[in-house]
Image 1 (cartoon, rainbow, N blue to C red):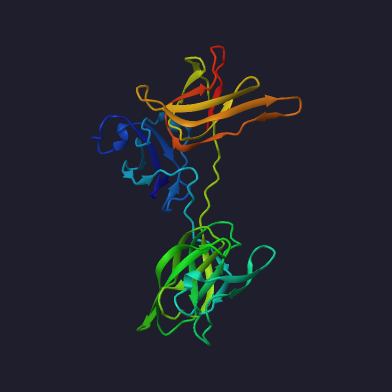
Image 2 (cartoon, helix red, strand yellow):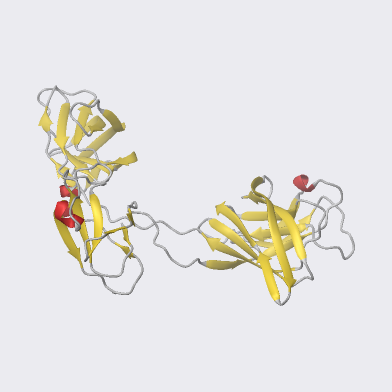
Length: 348
């Protein structure tokens, strides 16, 4: 949760009573004071703890509110645990190669001959199709992004200052220099100067991962003399420190066990533990109200736990397709019996 204010904040949880007093904090059931690390900073990221999840009633945590010391509600937003932190863009220079000017309109059929280094990066590029035109401007550029380990959010081009520039380009992406996919179309590149001022547009939004990008003009306008290409790397997701709630189950019909979660925890993974060796095919279901139908959250999958003299072997945890804050959970065994003991349900 991001907090936007400059004094001591208080996280409060609402009750059903409508806010009538000037200080709305009085209408909340619980409060947790926050001592901020810097009084003059502009934004804060707060990790909700077990106490907040236990006290919240709303499945969407709509009853969690942030206040300043004067009792004024502050704007805030709820993010998932892997949401990247706001940070300055990271730019990395990429190798690029001019493509020969092409005759006709066969740009889509451009075939490239390349020499690569042992790490897969491009050393040299030649065009098979088309005809070079003396000292004409290049027919496009090939950008080598094979060294990147993340996706490309955007490309930024630098060129030698022309008298005036206003062209449109398209961008194709490929992982093998043979099959290309359009990722950006009709992108303006602008460089204009007047009365001592300069207007530039040299950023191309990409938003995907690929080893190579091909930039070619969409019309007959001449491209500028390129001097550098930089890639803005896609921000990596935060590493999640998983926390687990171990629940004991109550037996229902043969092979069915029900569990109750003691808070509005955002559940995204599941695991099963048994007191002895076991191999069982399970299906996991959940719901937020006893009167609602059960929804399948994971499975069916085979969960096993085997202990021998040397090591302990067990199945991998299961990831839920969509994280949920449901309170009621149920495990169903494919071949359950009345004598089957209730396994421990571990929710991550």
